[in-house]
Length: 68
Image (tube, helix red, strand yellow):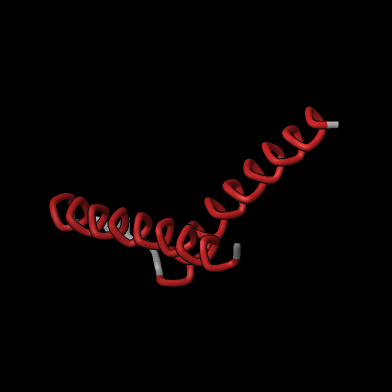
């Protein structure tokens, strides 16, 4: 369970890092900094992971209630 959760968090963190690279490219073109700090990148990944956990918890609870 936790191994899969760690993999899922890494997935969201990778997405946020790629997003930041895209923002860096936009920043270079427009000459305005739109990038995120490392702390902001991690926070964004944590928020997405939290939404994922909430969604999965609701799905599992609904499954359990249907089985009762």
